Image (cartoon, rainbow, N blue to C red; front, top):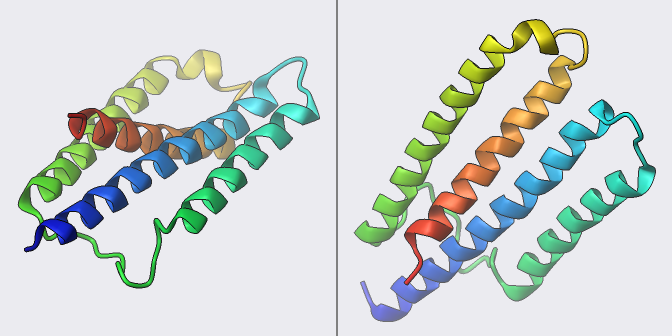
Length: 139
């Protein structure tokens, strides 16, 4: 594998991590939005605009080029290991939060809907994945 291919995959992984973080923040805002007592429409629009803005930024900068072709694994063994460890972090974080929600279920039952919890779990998984990749790939 050439050095240029490795750099292309590193760039692709970094952009996927940042996209995952922005998507997680947006989903977190959307999931918490109905639970706030004094909600404001600008908060929801700000989250949606941040997600769409980050998505357009990554598409324009070439994060999702046709030449790269998204695959489930990376060719470079080191990047593949980082990706696998990030998925392990996601599973551990999800299990921990599901356990915490189970313990607090009596207090949350009336205030939180199923769609809010599903969106919260998606937000958590996206955030953990993105932060894990960024943390592991720092130099």
